[in-house]
Image 1 (cartoon, rainbow, N blue to C red):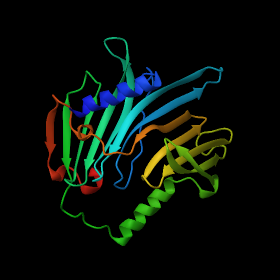
Image 2 (cartoon, rainbow, N blue to C red; image 1 turned 90 degrees about the horizontal axis):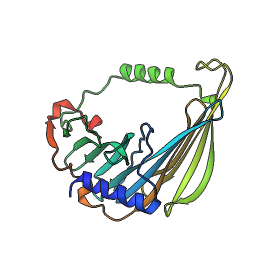
Image 3 (cartoon, rainbow, N blue to C red; image 1 turned 45 degrees about the vertical axis):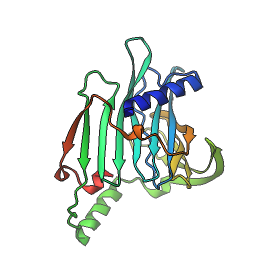
Length: 258
């Protein structure tokens, strides 16, 4: 069974269990979070968007995506790119799927759900040629350039939120609050944003995030279903009927393949 079929099966199961479709029409992109380590899992994540408008109206929506990792460290992740209605009027997620295999040092990506894009699986091979190391002067220049783009540290306050259980896994959380002074980013008055993150040390996985910014609204990402068994190999396979487009090693470096 191809990856698209496996993903569809996961989506159908999620819909049946939650009595809710995979996404709501009108939502934008929904990104997941990377993972580290070699503990196997298959997960379903739900991203909820909510923004309150000045007139009291509320605009919101949600999208479900999937991610997986096997015991060898191979990873699959879906990124939501929107939600449309299919030929039966049912919500259909537009997905960008990525698979990275550390054993072969290859990465693959493809789109699912789009009728207006070629059905192509792009395969990239990591370069085996080491990159020329940066000089101390170049490293210092890079650090200074990055520091110029960062807000002052005194705008941030981080607090420990302790531990709790999400999807049967113990996680530890923290909340970072940023206070933006008037005029710093085009704001007439002071702005306050908050970002929570809850992580599982055992799985090396972000289990939940909550981002609240008055300019963009509130976004909540949470792993709602988690299976810690080895995933079905079909989850990592390219969809049937897609053309394989191979890219040689000189097209991509080791750093961009990961």
